[in-house]
Image 1 (tube, helix red, strand yellow):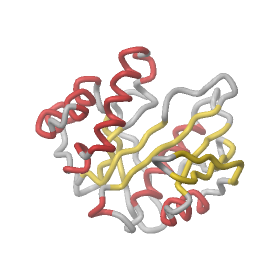
Image 2 (cartoon, one colour):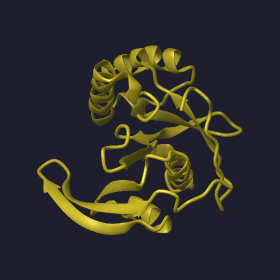
Image 3 (cartoon, helix red, strand yellow):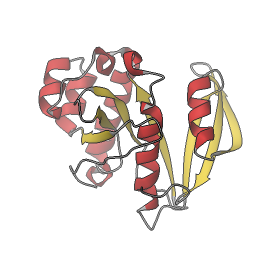
Length: 186
């Protein structure tokens, strides 16, 4: 996937397009430079993009790109609501498919836009993208056990619980998977 927007719709009529974050944009956001990250992305980003957790993620993704530039089509993108052009979150894969054909999704909705259908729009777009890639066989999602909104989102797309993990920072995390191709383009 290159810089082409990816659009999707869902029952709640939400539409999103994805905007790629270049290595320079990721670096700016990792450094807490919201203006620089917005300028590089070409869209006005929300303060969410420079909170501590987001900065850690963007620093990790910038390092990932430095190590493997071919990962660019798979990693975090900005989710923009259409047709209004408002940034509503970020979404992407944790990287290219592994040797078993598995990709893991991640998505975050900016706090002011939660519970409006944007997570479903982002996840649908990611699942359609995964289905379009012949090497992808499985899509994984890991969700904190206390994140009822994300648990409902993955359930709506037929993800099946396959395990759980725990750590000090996230607590109990439930691991879900769905076969690639479970959601088709509309």
